[in-house]
Length: 219
Length: 290
Image 1 (cartoon, helix red, strand yellow):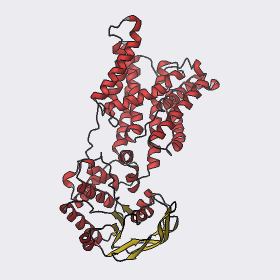
Image 2 (cartoon, each protein chain N blue to C red):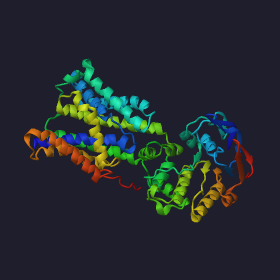
Image 3 (cartoon, chains in turn cyan, orange):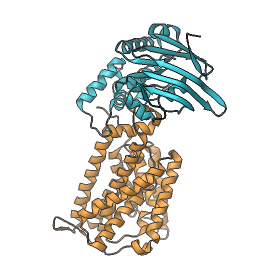
Image 4 (tube, each protein chain N blue to C red):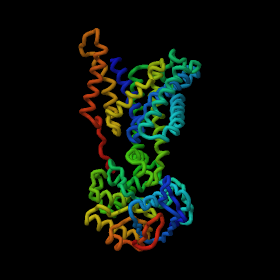
């Protein structure tokens, strides 16, 4: 599904990724762990086109996607969320989902589009907040909404950054259930997370990041 | 009555200008100080085509829109490489350049002498001579622009525009081509701004660069802000308010020697008070429901 070959990334003199290799198998949940500044988010940014690797190759379904713009990479089938929540806060929950699922630049919103967006809201347990501006949702609900946006356009590979960090028990359960459902539905997931029971419940494979490289295992 | 009709025509012109600016500045967050320049390009295109080539209104109108759009496209392709304050300064530069061209390109625009003798509009063989007929034409075109912008802003395009004005990274992560969306919004805004320019040239029958200054750009932006950045009906109200207020102040008894200056002070004071009262504009953005 995704192959990273010998990825290097430096910021000035600071070497963040140092010949990193990673192969993701389709339909599995891979969890990245590592200390602060170990390069986990940098890796996400490289895969999704927000950063260019200093060297190395990024291949998605056999196709070289290194250096492509973020919007093109998303359209190839890679969705992502961010550690610092990113949403259109003035727009309603439904509109955020509609925004995420729309593909055409100019398209009027049909009833079928709204129904599809409502179904996504239901999957992330936010139907009751349909018309609430995203900025007025609780932190946990905003996390769920970012997941809804991530899955709304049916991306095959999902990169999820700390999905359960700082959320309450109820929303923790909802996120866990959703990620398991996504996995059972055939999605490939690469997630950054540190919560032990969440990792245990959702992950097929755990990787530890240190010194700009990855190795199997939790530490 | 003629005076009132004249004022309503001017309100219509500023409604179109504010709606067109609302598309890029209100919905897309691209605050522009160049809008009077695009308005002027529309007016000069219509004036030159009518005076020099005898082009009818229905030919001049699309040509003015295309020319204004092309200028905006060229300019935005560069200016949109910058963001926020830097983008505003870029548009300020564009406004200064366009004004300078109007004021100094004697061979084309006659500079400060302006272009006199612009003929009235003829539509389908009929002359739009009376103020009532002209007001009707202005109202129809203003309504068309309103509907077009409303359709655009409630479509996927408008949603992307609103999202990217909040968070470009979020929009990019959802597969949105942020640059192309902004470029399109800015260009469409300039094309719509050419329409009131064409109408104004034919209506006043004489244009010179003083109608398309930086002050005019700021005035149009003030309408959009007072109306509520993303509220098209708010812009209509704000255009009427800001165009009619100075006229209303003429009827307030003020000492003759300082009346003109005093009116300016009162006008500015009222504007400040209105912004305090309606800090998010007349029509703070209503929630969109689908």
